[in-house]
Length: 80
Image (cartoon, rainbow, N blue to C red):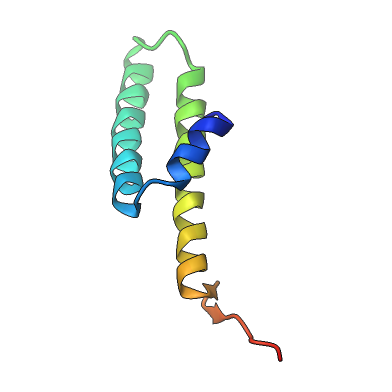
């Protein structure tokens, strides 16, 4: 996923990102199936799809942390 595309996804809603993650997970399942039956020619699409899922999951996590102020189950301390 290129930087421009990541910027686009940062502006997307959580629901849109969730739908894209589900779509990529389905695509990954199909690629793995093709790999096991010997139809997949370009093996790098599996790695690229996994990476794209990870990037989108990271964006979702960043949004959650930003909105709730909670990181790893611990609320941020307020100084001052």
